[in-house]
Every structure is written in C-alpha cells, then in structure tokens.
Length: 218
Image (cartoon, rainbow, N blue to C red; front, side, top):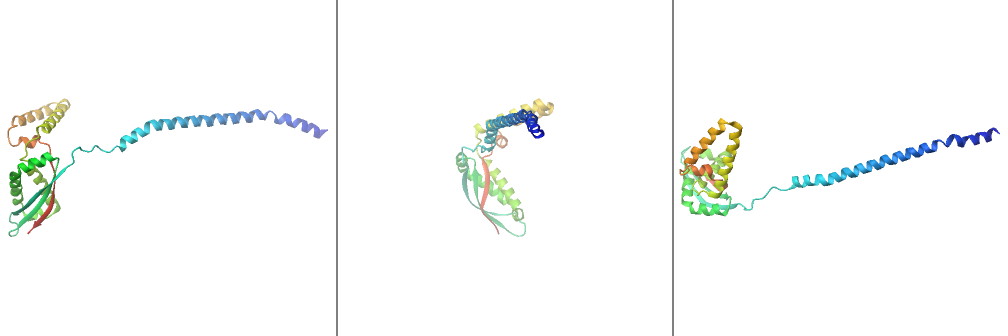
C-alpha cells in the first residue's frame, strides 16, 4: 500500500514543473530570434554604408589628361670657374615638360634657352657640382632658366591669378589689416605687369624636371 501511494503521488509532484520548462524554452527561442533580427539589421546597415566609404577610399587619384613630354637637349661643354686649376663640364639633359605646347615653345626659344643654361653652367665651380645635392640644385636652377623666356600661357595664368585673388580675399576677411597690406602689395605687382618679373609671378610651372643623361667634370 505504501508503494502504491508513493507511485500515485509522484506524477502529482512532477506535473507542475512541465509548464515551467516549456516557458524557459519559449523565452530562449524569443531571445535567439531577437539576436538573429538584430544581426540581420546590422548586416544590412553595413552593406549599405560601408561599401560606399570603402569605394571612396579605394578610388584612385585623378590622372592628368595630358601625359608629360620628354625633350632631349643637345650636350653642353663649358669652362667652370677656377677651383683648383682649369676644369670644364660636359653635360646633356632631358627635360620633363607639362605638355607638347611647352616643348614647341622651348624649340622656338631654343637659342635664348641654351644661352641662359650656358651662362648658368659656366658660373659654377667643380666643387659645387660634385655632390648629389649640388647636382639637384643645378637641375632646379636649369628649370628656372629654361622656363623664364617662354611666353606666358594667358589662360592658365588667369586661372592662377583668380585663385590667388580669392585666397587674398579670404585672408582679408580673417586677418584684417595684414591681409589688406598683402592685397595692396599684390596690386603693386599687378601694376608692373609689363616688366620682365611679371611672368615669374603668374606663369604656372611647365618645366617639371631636368634629368641629366651625361655629366662629366674634367
């Protein structure tokens, strides 16, 4: 009789726990579904937002529509300034130019260009040209001498002057008297537009680099 009573009582003790277990499973299922929904929302946001930024970062920089033009220049032979006895320089170079129009302009002005470069080279001492720094400095000076006699590209010069004026106007709004003084000085430069110094102020750079293809000091 005792065994039968215990057996009859056991189901009554276990039965109330069944709904509790079911509730836990249901709650766990709701949590899992909520996590899935949140994950899907995050993935959608990443899909729509991140690729746009990634593509913007990966976009290559704009490439100039005009490739540079390389123009060889005939060899120069000049006597150098006395450093330690008589020495001379033999050198040839190739100019890297912004466009074909610049190359054509240099060809037109070639007698003056060569004269300017010859005078520059003959003003140097051998000791100034032995180092890499000396050669790099000479290349920069040759760029200036080659570009100096070229006619000003009025369209490009006008654009540069407009940008310069806009910057001066912005400075005027920010720094008051200092910017006004600067604008006045620029106006003084503009009044001398017919002088030889004017092209150096307004002309954009068209000789991009000078590469030595032959360089011997003896």
